[in-house]
Length: 281
Image (cartoon, rainbow, N blue to C red; front, side, top):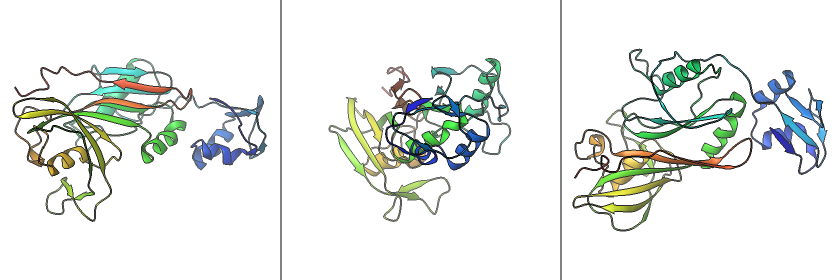
């Protein structure tokens, strides 16, 4: 990672501004991974405008999840990032049941089979029943960058949902979401819940269902499912939230878009679906 200092300041202050944690700054210095104008820096110094900052974030680390060797679909990969296509019916990380295969364990298997040494660091999650794009960070020094992206809604996440009934216009659903106190692992619209905003736009109408694009401004658990139920159009296959029974939850994370932490380029990745199978008619 190379950056020109835009304004004179203290090095530590600048590193925090580009989203390195205090712990990471300390480790980067201890491991001699920071250079200013080609000189290794091990302490906080004053950096001047137009100084060249170089940070070596590429680091081999032991795989920290038990690997499972099974094919997974890779949507994007470089030295720093991995985006995989999660199938419906698989959880991201362990829920304590040793018999469950997780996406983390499949990624660990992929790393091992391709001779890569990285911790398994998923940036965000999807419900077990939801399919689509999941972003992994290969370099642990960059996870703070993605934590900031998630906290400030800087990763655009777009979904496709097949819902009951007819939706004929775009809408913004702005309703707070909280836990349902009576049913475990269920959420509901609640005045005392956390702010949640979902944008929806109809793409295709069938006789008794509508394919809609959903975009998140916030990322609450079950947000799309709760919001669509709240307007009378539950996701088909979502029996927790009054959806019609189907062989799967008809919710798919089809697109991720974000700024790459190293080259500052906009990365947009899509997970294609078969529209004929993503239908109930």
